[in-house]
Length: 345
Ligand SMILES: NC(=O)N[C@@H](CC(=O)O)C(=O)O
Ligand SMILES: [Zn+2]
Ligand SMILES: [Zn+2]
Image (cartoon, rainbow, N blue to C red; front, top):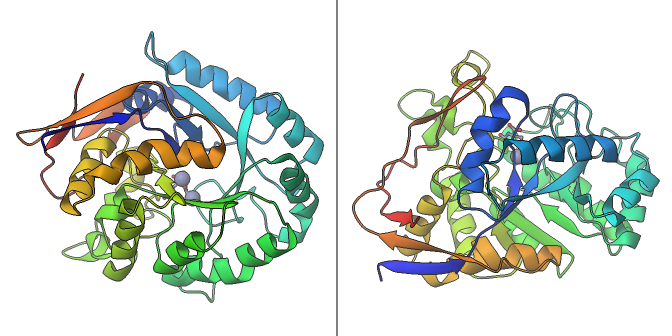
């Protein structure tokens, strides 16, 4: 097979940033994707409906003329978030989901949640109103090894929250472990999980072998090979619990190539070529549409996109090594393998 046509894919976890970077970054996602869940971890974070509306307007202004790309907005959950504001923002159609960051877990998460009991009323209101909760699932306890933080979060935080908030619809964002895969698979209709492009390709060796490679550092950090293989099996299985959330997370090169480098891999530019290569390697090209285009909208109770994209196979694909933005250059994720599938114009 050297050509495959899919419903237009969506990205259920995306960082577009703001300010001078936004105009350089937004077209990279708008080129292939129909919609994306827009992460709210700006500085300051997108906490209120008014902030989400203003950010949405800035995103729409940054899109190429004629783009049909639709940003699906989220609110950043804090211990002070007002349940009524969240419900109103959802009922008006302004926001699609709410994002939970444990304080200190990742980039711009200092305003996140320390005491999960404090957000109980918000989570209960969300369960009642069918508002999905996107979760960065890592504990931050200093005695927990960074490679164990996802598995411990599931046991100590996520499962207790789900037990005491029946009906709460949860998306485990960017899962990186076999424990995450197993928990999502067993979780029923109210639990989904996004998987990134880069976690299907790299294990932790990519970051550490042969010298430290900051462009492969992201959170949750890539784990052992057995976990990457569990993610590959989940993504290519067609199981409706799993869908694409690239977590494409641009940082300018000086902030990545740094004594204390930022976490995030920027994959918007070449994600569809990488995914087609990965699914073909696993004999699962026929499941790419489920993962990238169908399972996500089904979980979010939205229609899949009406239009399609076509990928064709040929000579190795070329793409820019860096995207220039108003803040500086952003290195595009290097999958360390030739890619043969390109999205037809
Ligand atoms: N994934 C990352 O490594 N970084 C993300 C934050 C996040 O999604 O946790 C970012 O905003 O840079
Ligand atoms: Zn995250
Ligand atoms: Zn992210």
